[in-house]
Length: 146
Image 1 (cartoon, rainbow, N blue to C red):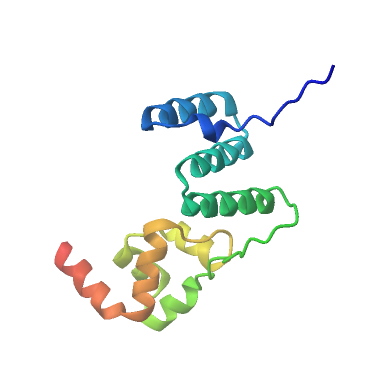
Image 2: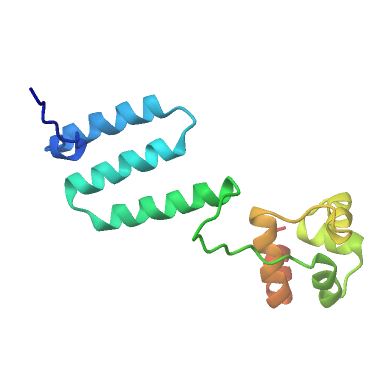
């Protein structure tokens, strides 16, 4: 006697939005710290909804996970450009003390950045980028704010 089996396809059983929501909630709960599990769940949902865009997102997520784990990957990495804080300060023509005071940066942080012992992040990075291209506009705006 032979038993014929077929591979279980979760996507075939996700017929309503509620089914998909419950499936995703269960996967998130079960996944723990395993991003590959979530990527697989997204692929199943994409198949259930015939959504090629979600499959593409899943592919990108899979590549990012492999890259982060140091595995070979097709991921295209775009590292952020470094911010040359000293060059920006020199371009503006200010001392460290004046620059730090004008731009609301602690003097010690500015000195660390200029020595390469850290890099500006978030809003500070944006402010420095704008200051590099339009220093007088930034200084005028900061002057009006005080």
